[in-house]
Picture 1 (cartoon, helix red, strand yellow):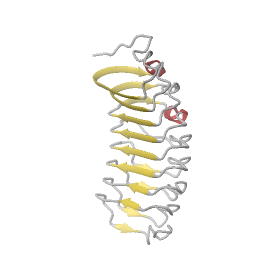
Picture 2 (cartoon, helix red, strand yellow; picture 1 turned 90 degrees about the vertical axis):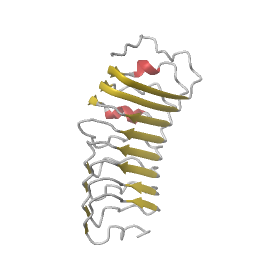
Picture 3 (cartoon, one colour; picture 1 turned 120 degrees about the horizontal axis):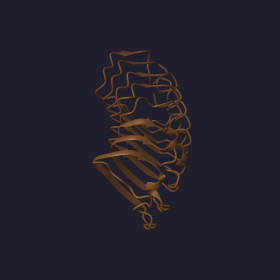
Picture 4 (cartoon, helix red, strand yellow; picture 1 turned 120 degrees about the vertical axis):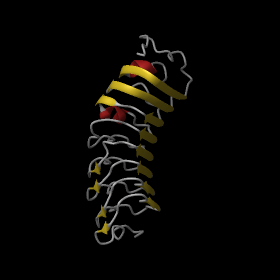
Length: 212
């Protein structure tokens, strides 16, 4: 069935709401925009599951300036404006799980200066990490890139993540780890590489961290 939302948001009078979970199961939504969140000025946590959506508006989160935790799951985008996330300058935790999109662009998370934890899981478009995807995340402490299709990691892909302590690359398709894979991760205390296809180490990939 197709979901029809009135022009007035159903949450408009719930101004004290700080946490909301929305699961639109078997619902055909063509557009998710800021009108859905009118009145939720104090919202700090949002979990949203939408199974098919044609477009996530660039301004979809424009009214949620206090949002600290965001989880988007089971979304299939035909069009995605990733800079919608960059407006969430108070965001501390972001989870994208089972997201189907054509590709994840470089600088997708630029502007999330307060982000401490990022999870990208079960995202088929995530096949490689370039050196710009994670740029701007200077305060990131935990990075979980699990159950994806990552086969290659560019040199210095993690170099800007100086505060990172936890890195999980579990269940990907990596075969080789280069010597400069983990450059800059001097505070790393936990590294998970389980269930990859690693058969070759180019020198010691941990040698250029202070914990190596």
